[in-house]
Length: 441
Image 1: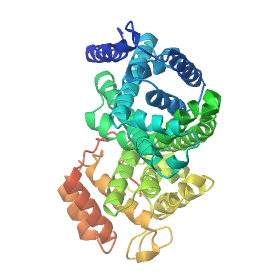
Image 2: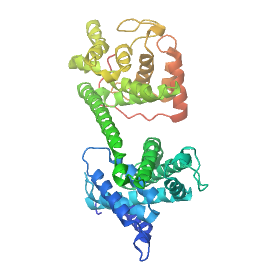
Image 3: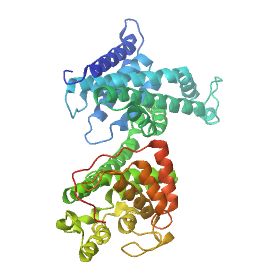
Image 4: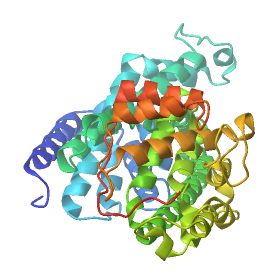
């Protein structure tokens, strides 16, 4: 705990005490708890938590099955062994294990309470009492309790409560221990964090129904097999995505080393390109692709002699022609990187001009790919608002006025308008790059 800031220590301690308080009723004398079910679910979750290199939430249906089958206090205990036995990558290991156990216990307890509040246990009891399940398929249990559709809705709601609680608690650690902003720690993570629980809820319900069926717990555990397969696929996707990001970072670092003036320029152009793209209504994969296009737009400078990139003084016509080959060099360099997609077109054509006087191919108007028109505006904007050795950075309003003056001849007016609106809404904070020579193209 000594390695944690004081605020994080207090936060973790409060979570541990709250988790212990929620689980305490299960161990009070005289409390009726199905310990066999609790122990078996806890053991299954512990085994799943020890599987190396897999998505840790793949066994969340086990926790949800506990929330559906057990009273809240007992359900909170299901997560504890797995959390304490799971591998810890960074110190302090003890504090991280305690925090993980408290976080999961509180999340499962909240999910169990939500399921009970929605009369989920009563609905499940009515379904189990039916035996053949015929009336449940019709949506009404013989006792008058709601049938399977209601039980499914209650299970999904409880799963979302589990995900919301776990994410909210995790956000508190990110704020207190890692000094992240509340916006990034909570609001930025919620949508992606909650989505998997829309699948976990029905899976947990299936486990709970099968657990009390004539086939018993062995049949219930079969539900985890497709979840594990999906988790493996998700892990492979994340690894591929991480490899893509590592490729991009390596290329950008190589450009920054070769041409010192661009230090930070590529990342800022990527950020400005994404701002324009959002204003144009792009989202998802296209938004990410245009951001990557902005980051990699100058990768072709790796093929330009360093002496030209760092030359003090004017370039000769021949030297300028060499500099102007960098978009084609960049296109050749990334030709074999399949995930770039439309970003390649921006790398090749971001120096084309709307009036056809740009390079490398003199494309005009709509002939210029959309991504290239976005990156051209973002590139020029950052070049004007960054400090260079030969001049101070221009104020943002001055740079915007220059873009607007050149709209229609050099830049696409739609892209300039989109950047203007985005800047009015979000502002701009450019890092200073004053230790670099003049830009060449």
